[in-house]
Amino acid sequence: MRPLLSPDQARELDRATQERGTSADTLMERAGRVLARAALDLTGGGYGRRAVLVCGPGNNGGDGFAAARHLAREGMRVTVVLVEPDRAPAGPAASNLARLSEADVRVRHWSTSTTPVELARADVAIDAILGTGFRGEPEGAYAEAIDALNDAPAPVAAADIPSGVDGATGAAGTAVAADVTITFGAEKAGLVLFPGAALAGFVEIADIGFAPEEVPRGLGVIEAADVAAVWPARSEESHKRSSGVVLVIAGSRDMTGAPRLVARAAARVGAGLVQVAAPTSALPAIQAGLVGATFLALPETEDGTLAPGAIEALKEHLEGADAVAIGPGLGRHPDTDGTVRDLVQAHTVPTVVDADALNAFEGRVGALITNRSGIVLTPHAGEASRLLGVPAGQIDADRVGSVRALANHAEAVALLKGRRTAIAEPAGKTRINETGTPVLATGGTGDVLTGVIAGLLARGTSSLDAASAGAFVHGIAGRLAGEELGEGTTAEDLVELLPAAVEEVLAPW
Image 1 (cartoon, rainbow, N blue to C red):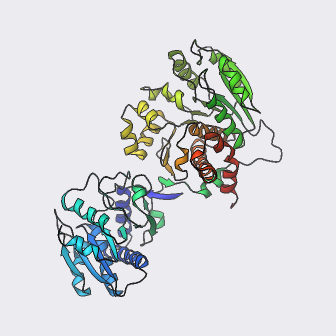
Image 2: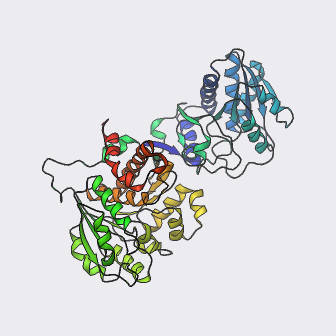
Image 3: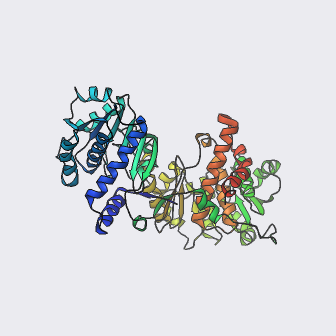
């Protein structure tokens, strides 16, 4: 798991490292050195080239001051532009600013008339205006300096994070669009979450002396090795029931495709047996497009959705299942909503709760608490907003905070779909998945993810690991489908490429 830091954690890591004997001046000197090296890489060398460093008054600016000195020693003509509308540099930043006179570095104050001219002549620019702790919208000279960097023709290297990007959420209004970001010690969450991820360019994690054991591990990016470590393996004695039985409770008269996608995805990740339970009138269409599953007709409402009698009809099948997937295509009806809520509470089988099953708990997130492990919620932002009673825009504005809130309120593992899937457990451990592609933005791909997670649960994978590994492999399958089929990729194509995605992840291990 590749660790990610929040701004508070970054500050704490800095403090802990200083307590272990590495001074703030030393850390800043090291940061300046690696930042200068990045600028030299962008220009192909130092002699005869120009660098302009736009620096704020804080420690981020101090890293820029240190970098300026190193660039001057490499033969560059260096100008530092100081943006300090509200305060003067202090501490190590002030010391590094004072040392620039020794290195023949020109220091200028921000000016709307002269700074753009300086930037227009530069071979490389460095953004060291605002650090990871910045939140909100840059104003005044800060906003003007950011705009000037974005307008400059030279490539831009950002110190720790592009200025204007929220280090915790990735939120950004007026922000630097960097070509390269050199982040110190460990990656910041805002560099992985959008839109910050789109503004960071190539991200390099630079070691400046933070002790590895001091780096917090509560938030991280899922990597292939993490998935390979938890992916279930069949023994020589395996048979279909020992490989996991998935019960899919999904579909309605008007929505028969979703259960097929869930069932096929569960089978494609190795579930030994898939059973599909659906309202009676929906079953013929579901059966016609699905081979290898078994089926159960359930009582239905006048609208062809799940009716209360389904609970009794499902009792025996629930006892024989290793995992349940409930929700896709169920539709909305008062009787159906009530039946879903009762079903989630009526058994102890690990369960993926998705789509209309989540909508059944709108405004009742506490009713999802079952006093058992094994529940995985898989909402998109709209469904999460209905569960938590907040606007959907607020969900996407802080995906990590939102998924953690949902996991805590429901006392279950929560997976928030979208650009950068976020996964959290109630204890606070949170993971981000980077795999995937825009071709996944099409109908049915969420149903496929539900099936993948249910298949892994049925094979004995824990809730957090099933959600994490499922999201990772689902994204790989999306990438493979996009490479092969482009914009015409459908959810059915995604299902077919799941085995190839699993092979890609597991083959190196």
